[in-house]
Amino acid sequence: MSIKRISSGGEFEAKVGYCRAVVAGGFVHIAGTVGQGDTVVEQCRSALSIIGDALAKSGSSWDQVVRVVYYLPDRNEFAPCWPILAETFGANPPAATMIECGLIDPKYRVEIEITAIAP
Image (tube, rainbow, N blue to C red; front, top):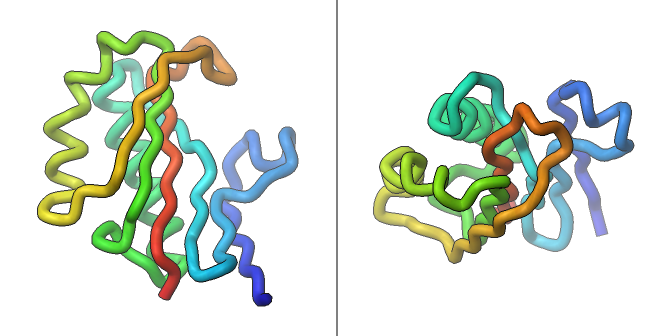
């Protein structure tokens, strides 16, 4: 089986020992991704931009996403992200789960993990 690894050069990739995405077994597995900004909405948009780049580098796209997991330290901050997520996935919404948990750094308000169909 062929495996393709995609790095975004993010600071935690080298520290933790992972890559942004792995294309294998017919799927694109995109690692939990945090974004930059002060608010959950800014971070959500930023994380989605990073994920969009990884999808493009893998040859996949938003309409091929089949699974998404959202991690938030405060579940009450999820609702402000809903319009952004609905816009991102449009007519092709994936199966989704939201988990309330601690993230790698307290400055982060949302982390997003994606699985998509590989090209």
